[in-house]
Length: 208
Image (tube, rainbow, N blue to C red; front, side):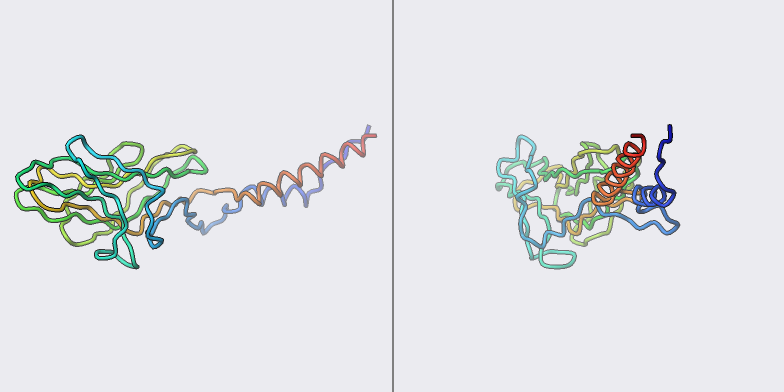
């Protein structure tokens, strides 16, 4: 019985499609990005500690790193009150493969008299940074080592030790998550499966 085998050319084609980024000069693939230029935070969820009664997460244009908008997390503390706590914005992102990823962003926190203001950065509830950076934006980059494939939660926000009166905020801009790992493109995966299907069909025809 003669069993037809896929041609060498077809096997090479499928191998190439299966590893579209497998080359010496790997190019970073962006799996998540938000520059807040669309002016919307509808896809971010808002949370706050119990004593923050009016948490606000919005896009504003009066303090940005670049472009027209930046993510603001803030609250207004009543005069004489004690507004110690946090306001956070969270959003789900998908890691297509298990690999190392890089989270980069610009962040700042408001100055505070008599308290300390921080910006918070977390992934899956794990704190990556709690940093006081009054007024000036600073570039931050974090390595997400061995991130599993699937959905994860990015959280950005403000934390203050004790805000007694006024507006307190942390601001974020140009948020991006990338990886250097090979990420198969959906179209390439579909072509590879189609090629294998054709090869299998040819093999069955030759067996008859």
